[in-house]
Length: 360
Image 1 (cartoon, rainbow, N blue to C red):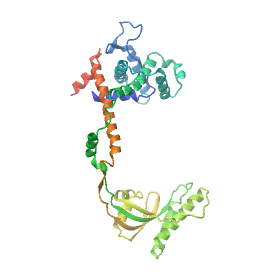
Image 2: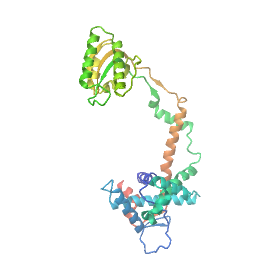
Image 3: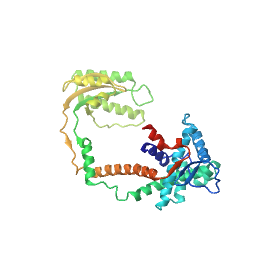
Image 4: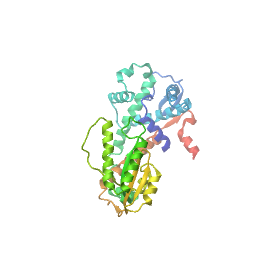
């Protein structure tokens, strides 16, 4: 039951504007000879109306889902009709209404056109128009019914918050992971010469020159800063920007083990770093879009584990538990409305309650 109602409720309250909808109940000047598909507390939903709307739904949905057939469309539409009728009847009973202007504005927003313009469309009249109005009206009425039914009942208690806290304690535990401190010189490349980077060949040549300088005794940090400046100047120049003064910058980075696996997008990087001892330097490593030379500084052990206290996260807990209570009420209430409604299907195969019993 829950699964069926949730699917139908979602299709009503989050329904695409291109589907149409309807205020149900007995229609004026109807003949008793019309076949009735289902009654909801005595209100009749007629088979011919159901089929017209289902046919339209099938044709429209088939544009994006060719496998969606009339039988499926009819099953969806009859579920929407029944649930919408239940909600609107409950609204009448509890004196919860929605102004026509609100419904019209919602239809206009979802259809992406002024309401007066929509009314000129021949396809937006009759059953389809009423079906649309019913769906949109129920989308307004149901939240108002919920507020009435659960007024003052959805504020979480201290006990509920503590229960949630204990059940999700891992979310409030923190530990600084083990990290690897590195210094890195990068030589970016891009074969698209319209981009502000070097070609792969020139980037590799630059990397080899810098590596040779370091091996001959040049300071890693000085060369790192110089290469970074050169890269920024190349980028600015290709963008048509002249800037002579660029701040010194050394790429001193801290990576976790997982980050090592992804940086700079090659498995070789992790393997090389893990093979180095503190103070050692790598050769040239090629990534997806750069060559790099790495200096391994140190491994920083994981930090001490800490846990946020209940009081520290109480405000967050209140929001989380409140959301859970609201979500639970949202589906429980509609299930109760459906269970208490007197719903009679002419064709037993339309009765989802029998289908659910048979599947158990």
